[in-house]
Image 1 (cartoon, rainbow, N blue to C red):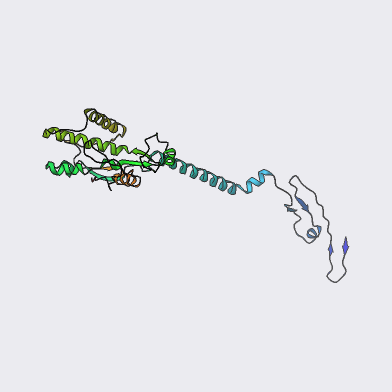
Image 2: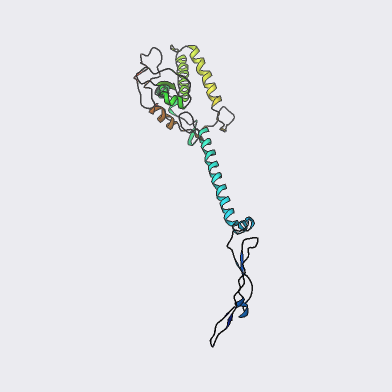
Length: 271
């Protein structure tokens, strides 16, 4: 107890008692405040650590926000992975998309079915199915897990492969030519087994590459003429084949054309 003399002297009684409760808080009583008419309520100071329940209560918003961010991050990773796998499924060994994106008018009249047989035959002759004969190096073959194939007869060390769409085009072309020659009573250089191979190759090609486009019909052997549909990008396939050309030509028997070193730009095909 302390006495201070003077005209406006007063008595200040200071008593402090500190103790730790179950939360580690310190309670201080100031008797002088009580003597001056102030409230004697204890002053609580958070000097120690809070209980887990109290901490969670005061940080609920932060916890929920952090949890939400974690969930969003994992969902983003999952979505990216799903898209990556989907893209892989829709990419062929060439790396080109199998998705149909190019609008085409199908079965429209073209030079390939001209009533003038000279025009039609010239258009079909211009098709170079050999454009689909490509050369791939050993690293590419291994990366794409391709089956073994014949080595290219040059010093490149590359292997020769054929893009199946061009093989189907080859078969279509030679069967048509055989039909025209038979119609004209002229000799045919390809063997019958080759024709039978091509017929069955086209059957398998159609069944393997299922096209579920629904065509209109008039019920009299006319269907789909002038109908719009989405197709794969043939131009992209042509460019790919061009970039990996084996410098090889699709040779027909007895025409005196060498297989190798007979490069032709483009495949002669138009829609």
